[in-house]
Length: 265
Ligand code: OAD
Image (cartoon, rainbow, N blue to C red; front, side, top):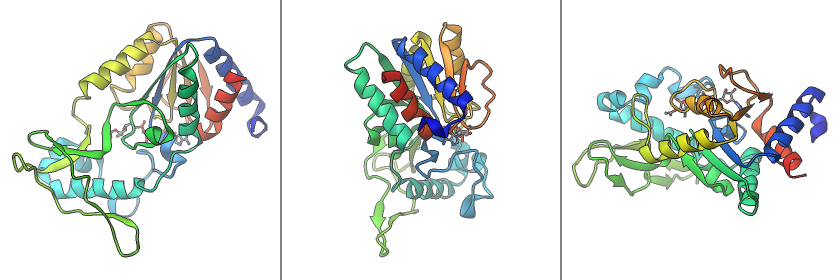
């Protein structure tokens, strides 16, 4: 597989593998790009079809949910439909394999994600979600968790479909919303503390498939760097992240299996 990469990129992969093999505390941050090869569009991909005329302010803010709960709920039900049949790709599996082997080595591999899908878990990883969970719901008013999972049902084509009718909370009658962090909302406290501690204490920080545009998650790489870590980025496209020591400019599904193979060779 190494032969599919340019000699310059192969040299960078080997350099990154050597660095990782020599360090104990690793913090990894993933973004939508790691799920792209599973068929889940990233946020920077152009929205198509039904939702192309809506912006983030119409669909992913608390104000949007107050203004038009049906619109916001329908958008998340549509996203659930997009994600439900997707499976982890080589990148998710490679990270899970690394974490599995780390259990019996002296490496500590902390995985943090901005993604709301559960593909890391499906691959077998232990992961901290900074931006919530697509498959969980809670009341938008009293915050109580809502168990009835998104009313998934099979339509007569046997495809999964998700009811767009609004649900209400059995405790306070408020509308049920996805348990996702929207723009303008605070990140979950425990998860953020885990991420901050891992970034502060790591020796290598790896940023994978994120545009590094959305804070506070985007600040974790800087935090790691300030505390002496080296930073590796895996992304086929350039990002505004200027503190990167090693750039692996290829798809995560291509780089991660190789990187981990090289590291453990
Ligand atoms: P973005 O959609 O902003 O960025 C995805 C990144 O993945 C881009 O930089 C792509 O170049 C890169 N990419 C695409 N395909 C890739 C591949 N196969 N391998 C590696 N990288 C690839 O997604 P995020 O950075 O995750 O927040 O976005 C951050 C947050 O903004 C999201 O969590 C979401 C969004 O609004 C909330 O929902 C709160």
